[in-house]
Image (cartoon, rainbow, N blue to C red; front, side):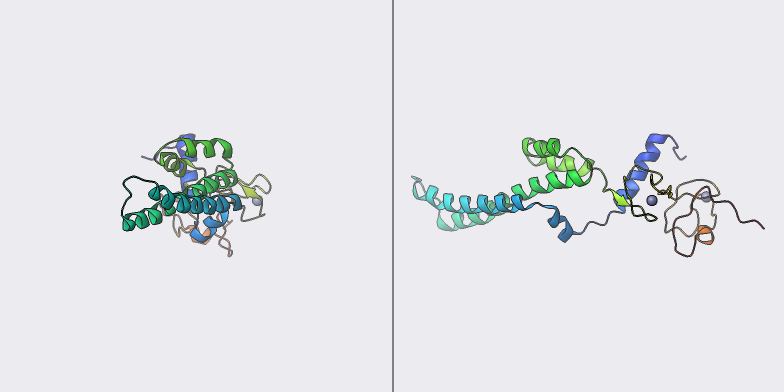
Length: 195
Ligand SMILES: [Zn+2]
Ligand SMILES: [Zn+2]
């Protein structure tokens, strides 16, 4: 049976929005702020200078191939950490989350567990209302500016449907016939055409 309590309905709406987010890696890199790139480069350079010096002063220096491998792998890790912190800092902001709190959490929680939690619980991106262009939260059912229905539903049985559904998956109502030529989602309130 379908659970209709408001909280699970809301969770389903948010999940639907998240699954419809088209995340492109190249665009995600643009989220990372400039200071994170600078910090990343500085950290790598400092580490690559420090490692050979530390080896020289070591009583039992590691073999050269081991040093080279260490420099390469540690370089990747040292480069990634500031970039990840910068990403979380700006990604949290564009998702309307507390950026300071999340930045501190990912830094303080060890073994990258902070990042895992962040990527699991982060809010969906705000998106643009298809009717008026206002940016709306994924938690909204209707656009607060133009009242556009942001969660298409079957006019027959009122169950939530996907904009790509040809027929209602719950009652087989012909959704495509109700849809205007533009393909915009139908509204539950739309009156049946007079026959
Ligand atoms: Zn709107
Ligand atoms: Zn239906």
